Each structure stands twice: as structure tokens, then as C-alpha cells.
Image (cartoon, rainbow, N blue to C red; front, side, top):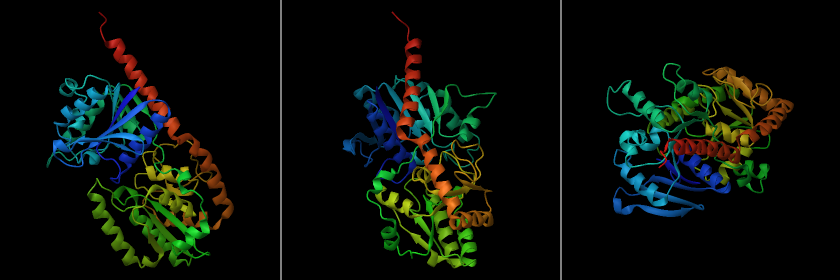
Length: 402
């Protein structure tokens, strides 16, 4: 099968959607399929369209604008390469809040692209459009879902929202994301050496946080919890792993500044170690350095969160917030510790338990490592191929025979 994966962001841009697309493409190729990536051009000039081999993948850096003119550019590549199916990886910030891709599967886009289109929603956030657009923003997202030949969501929260009994989305599937960071990348890992390299003393505990700061990830709750642990005299450091803001969402930078000011005002600056942006092998080593990962999502833990999947895959003890829907493989007090969202004190208490109780921590690590087998890339690719094959069968049945 020849597959075109469409994404508004792609490495070296920092962002989960681009990382996901790269890993999915690799897994599809490993399963015997042909997968290419279609993404944003490096330059806005049409003459700057490039096709390159990147990490063993064919990457078209071709789309100069994600407005309506992207239809012609996507169609040109799709027909030239003879794709059997297109898979849009959708998250509005990745497309600079432009909505041309939202209407690609619609009537006018279909005149140019005569092949099945599957859309994977990485979240159901809405694009900006224009001031006071109101409910029109959701309609733009809904249009993409309704006109796609199949829809993939990464978690049960988004499945529930698209399963409106009055106007349900047909051909809807739930396939979780995997970790963009493979623990094998860490290579020969010596935890003591890694801790010493980061200035962590042998007797100190290490809490970890991975990912960008934004309003939904509970950065301020994390810092208040760190303050509470510090006030109790616990020898603890917080390792902030990775870049703070990413490449796509400008609101991340504003929130990151707020969190940095909070760190200073709480007097915990000497307990925070920020790595800055790291390449995947360094991310993996940093994750393995941590005793406990603390991920206080304001809207609850979810399989849409790449940082959660990275912690699971690396077999870390995890303290996070209660999910709105059960997460397969994660059971409170056995493979994860859940606390209420927006409760820094509960967060601190759970983190302290996991740090001090070595038997509990070992249990959490063992059980979460077993859960990681549910979220491997070969499994995700196989489930995704099943969706592609279904839409291709439907397309063949819908084609009139002569």
C-alpha cells in the first residue's frame, strides 16, 4: 500500500504531531508498506518545494500555505506518487491555524484529490479563523471529520465528543498514540553517571516532567507541589526535560514565562534543572534518570499525551491526574498513582509516597512496563492499516463497474 501522511509540522520542528508522523511512517514501512510525508515547505516560494530522504523516509517539504491553495499542492504530489490513501494528521496549531486542510476531504477538495482520505485527530481544539467566529470554529473541525472517509481519534474523550447521537461521525476508530522516544535510544545507560552530569547528588530524589509548558499541563500545580516537598525538607530536584514551548503554539511561550516567574517567586529555583531541547537519545537518558514522573494535566491523564506515553514506555513510576475515561493498562496504586486535577497538595503527597516507599515505586515501574506493550508502534501501525484497508474496500464497492 502507498500511503501519503499529511502534517503541518515535521522535525526538526518541535511538536508532537510531527514526531508522531515520523514514527508512524517508520512503523508502516517496517510492516512492508510505502509511506511518504507531505509537510510544510521550508520556503514560501513555490520553487523551493523539495523532496528529501530524512531518516530513511521520503519527505515532501512542499506546502507553501495551508489555506485553500494547499489542495493543488497536495493533489499534485498525491497523483504523482500514486498514493492509495491519504492520512491527515490534524492538530490546528500545526497548520498555523489555517483551515485549507479542513476542507481537503470536502466536495471541492475531492475534485482535485480522487482517493480515500483518513483523518487522525490529535486533539479536537478549534482553529482561530477570525474574531468572534464562535461556533463556526467547531463547524470547521466537524467538517473535516464528516467528510473524511474514516476518522481516527487517539483517546476515548475525543471519541465521545464525535459520537453525538444526533449527528454521529461514521467510520470512527480509536487508536492510541505511541511514545516518540524509544528507550533503546539511551544506549549504554549508567544512572549514577547521568545524575552526576546534571549536578544531582547521590542522596537526592529526582522528579521528572517531560514536554512543553501550556495551560493544560499543570505547570503551576507542579511548582507548588515542589515547594511543598521542599518545605518538608525532602531532598528533591525537578528535572524539566525538553524544550519549553515548541514550534507551533505561541500561547506556550506566554504560559512558560508565567511558570518561570512562579519558580522564582516560590524560591525553588535551586531545585529545578531545565535541560532545554534535547535530541531523542538524550531525552531517553533524562527520562531514565528520574525516580518519579509527575504529569499534572489539568484535564486529566489521556492517551493523547505523548509525555505520558513516553513515561509509560520508559517504565517510570508515574504520578498524574485522574483520567476522564479509563486508560487500558493503568490502574491506580498498581501501575500509576492518580490524584485530583488542580490539587498541588495531593500531587506533592503522592509524589512523596512514590519517592520514599521503594516497594511501591518498584511495583509501579514493573506494572507500567507491562502496560507499555499495549502502545507499541507495530501495534499502532497494524491498527491504522486496518482502517486504510477498510476505506479502500469501501471505495472499491462504491466505484461503478463497467
